Length: 277
Image (cartoon, rainbow, N blue to C red; front, side, top):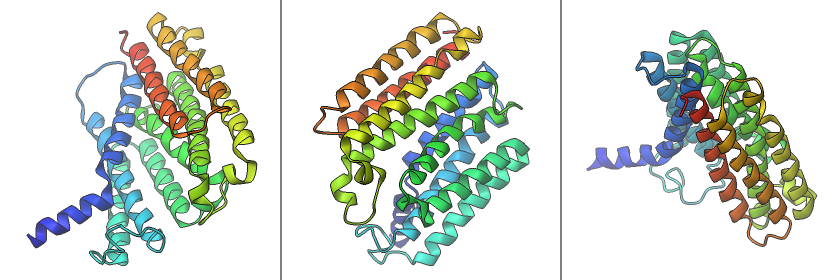
């Protein structure tokens, strides 16, 4: 029973669902760059390494937030803070080593992602805008990371997806910041608190506009065809709708949720284009 309890605590610290989502995002990047579903060791590494880096980041986050979070395993006395940090570092080392073993480019991306996550957890989470940029960069980097295992991290389609993911995540994080304004006032000064809700909505709209403006590029370059264009157009309309309605919103959970759905639709568009659906 003691072993089971320790396992449960480790799983709670790792937040494996987040790691799985990072792995799936990298897999999508791999499939877009490769253009087929052929099984290969690189495909499994594209899933495994982001999972390890994400889990390591979650552990390091709990270590640095040990004086803030009230109901996590460290605060409950179920594990020592230094042990959490050590396990997190081991996850980082395992992921980075595996990435370098298979592909130098992927290794450097994994190293950069781990470094940014650590800086975010240590101090940048409380820095307005910079913290949001770190989160957006880490989200966007999962796609070129997966593509790196095909030998080219930034082909045109992946570069477009990277930029779209970067700006749409910045918009999502901005809406989330507005949603969390009252809670955040007690612990940190966020961009939403500095700018206020209306100006933050305007900034999120600009981020969405940037994502929309880059979205036609794969079709204009004849990389993807009509299925991509149709699906990405739907996502773009959703970005516009979310941006406009946000100015009169009373619950910014809706905008944050909508952004996640629209980002998933954008990914589906890229997959449809890459796999000729």
